[in-house]
Image 1 (cartoon, rainbow, N blue to C red):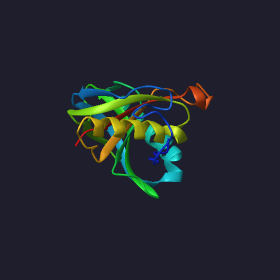
Image 2: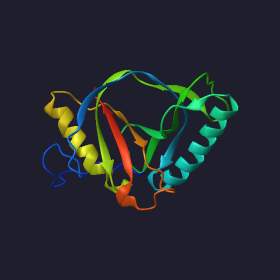
Image 3: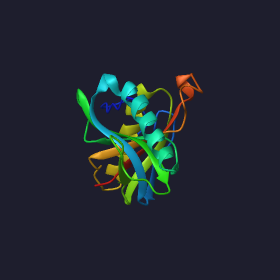
Image 4: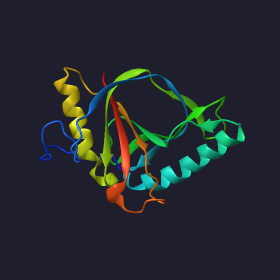
Length: 170
């Protein structure tokens, strides 16, 4: 689930790798439960497995429930490491406990696209979203997030994985 933001990708301007045009949306604030760490890029998969498990256990222990698929919120552009939150949207009362914090995804305008394919090709979708934001006369925010719509353990073929990429405007 590595975030990669390449330069020119050879795709039609503003289109994702799977031919989708990014859409402008408004997102309302969403309560979430997360684990936040600065993680080496090559250790993201292990971090996600640990964080998603810890969040799910904490949410269930408090009688709350997931209100959507797992996600990762990236703070700033990644380098060798990335500041990332991983968790689930939640329904019901949830209060942080241990390494699992209660937080929110913001009420904001954003652009989104569904990426189909392996995580290491997400850069093409980010590039298409960035182009759409700029074409709209806005600037991309410093943070962005991904919802993992496909569980790789249930669907082992990376070509079928779907990731909803959301990039707020600044």
